[in-house]
Image 1 (cartoon, rainbow, N blue to C red):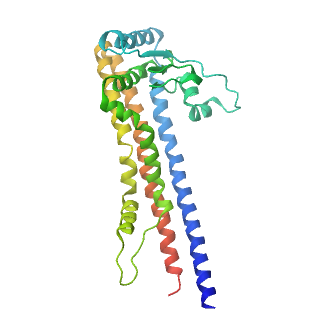
Image 2 (image 1 turned 135 degrees about the vertical axis):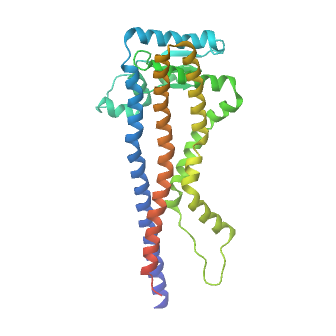
Image 3 (image 1 turned 30 degrees about the vertical axis):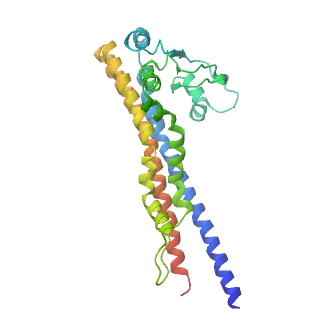
Length: 288
């Protein structure tokens, strides 16, 4: 009977662990979805500034961006190109364009809602390496920021490294964001101390929100440097009014990255709270 009772308790504990993990994971996922509107709002604010430019100003801005390549920097000699990206293929998904823009960066770029620098060839998009992809009619102000990324990659080993760890830093941030959902605080048994491994487990769970945010540091730093580069060139080449528009557009772009970093931290915080709440509730129910 005692053996059966122990098995029942173990089965119940395992079931509770699974439930608490699923609840914490679901709550963390909801946070990431909840952060999406803030990111979209920042991106739309950024694109709106460019869309409100008249045709003559668009030409002036694009000419200034070309001058960054050929006059202010060595980027032209380094082989950097600006691709006027306006065709990402036909929307055959059945999804509304605004929805497809969220899930497909290429479609968003073609529609003037995104821009990017690629240091590698992208055959599917017909883009060569060392290329800025931007719809120059709909999002010309963002070209300066993307040229800032090109400058980071081509002229600095440090900033090139920061750019190359972009994907690993995102994966690490995601791991820390979900860590509290997949683990639980370990409490010492009567008369015993926690092992080093158990202390590390508890320490990582406690610090997971900060660690999730800090994992985004390479991306935030490199994005900031690209913005500083772009703003500097825009100030040299454009009128004060148009420079302010570039700087404002870049501010909104950077806010979207800050929102992403903050969402990872909040995911970890919420996941930990939900998982710990389940654990405390189960402890209270456990037989003495």
